[in-house]
Length: 85
Image (cartoon, rainbow, N blue to C red; front, side, top):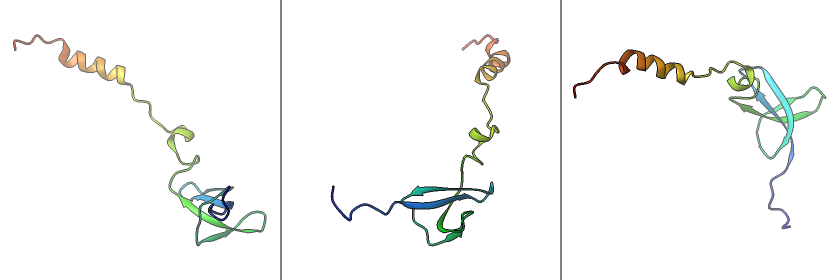
């Protein structure tokens, strides 16, 4: 393996400001901003727009589209009419 070509892999805090959620993990992501973590150490912090705390799929706020119901409603409205064309 070639030396000195890989980015530094180190602890980084990812923070979802909307949900008020943050987690410490290891990453090659870089940031000029830092945060003091619960263990008393200072780590780089990367702000993200969506995390598992705010994504609708993980929070249960996602909406399932009822396509079958929409098709049936369309057919009730427009499907039963005879067309002369």
